Image (cartoon, rainbow, N blue to C red; front, top):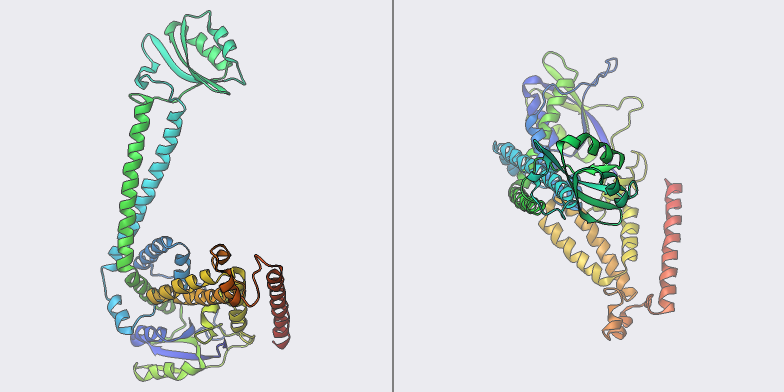
Length: 468
């Protein structure tokens, strides 16, 4: 349970067998594979010459599928799918997966277009709703050969209704109040073309705001109803697109993920080929591999012609990459360690200690046995059903276990439900540390335990730092 001890190897391979050997090396547990740049050669950053559009489409489709999983999508990104080599090779030969990925992308783009259209229509409905008290036809509003009809509103802070009507009384004009509220009065105004300039001058000076209703037909109410029907249709279309994506996710997500891993490995090999130091016939690579796997990797030269894999000393000042190595219980907690940064190569791996305190404090924060049992059941089912999030679910299982223990010790069963249903005595006998909700002794015991564990945690951390 520490940072894995690694050994550096040098790979020399004839160009005719280069791709095959690198592909097989990738299937082993290696920490890093890089083109070999001998001392004196200047390393250069190079962009991949070959742009793999298929890989881009697969990655995009997987991003879309993960977005449908919420927090489980974040976990899925961090997880790997366990797969047999025969299954991996079978899926890598499928040619229809890129088309399926493009279907997922197309459905998602259709959803985006529908949601954007819905947002636009809702904005339009909000605009029309301002004028909902006008019951006439909207085609009757506008400029006509002999007269003009306006629908607009007057802000009372800028000009009162009485003052506005007073300004217009000497003109041959028809003015009707449509509705009024605390701040605004809505008017329907009609006037002859001959006085248009005078009317517009008064409207401008009074801060009269004309409604933007050009291009509409029928009544306000009919237009709003029509647009709500359009939203319903778009929502149905959106649900259909969403359903299509979920069907494709259920059927093809695993294959797409594995095919994406295959294409990623192919791309990495291709990039290595384009950036490596080489002679006319031989290419060179360095790789870091676990000490216990060195002989397995070296054995590949026996099955690949024209290749040699040998030990090589790290360059001066070169630090090995970091690869954590822990047992089955501790391994799920590596994701907690990586959130804060992995240790350096010669430092102590804190994951085993994090596994104890993280699960313990998780349980102490929840302190509810029923919630703990429920969390254990859900996480155990998810760990069995969904292999790609198994590590995260195991982490949640341990958290649920300690939530159950702490809940039992402090009589936490769906809050303090036992005391309400007359079973407080039974669960009280199990609660060895008392009930912190209903008794002072239980509250003080909870405080003492929290304080004790906190002190132990801090001093343990200081001890580990001193030891390291």
